[in-house]
Length: 71
Image 1: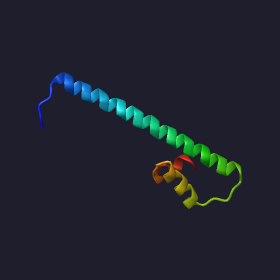
Image 2: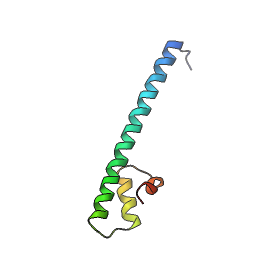
Image 3: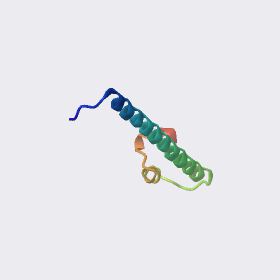
Image 4: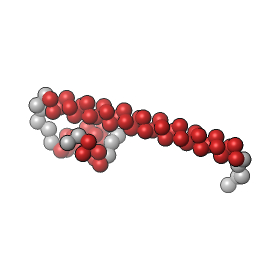
């Protein structure tokens, strides 16, 4: 690995933090959209199964670990 200067290390660190924030915002947006869709399904009294919710969440790129946010 090439040696980098302290200022380059700081610059890289800042870019990583910016990417983390963008990823976090993207995740929060996808979670919010999925939650809105879930609420629409529930409020319309449509029959749905756990598999339907799983498909919807996977469509937003979300893991089933977040199912607790919906139930």
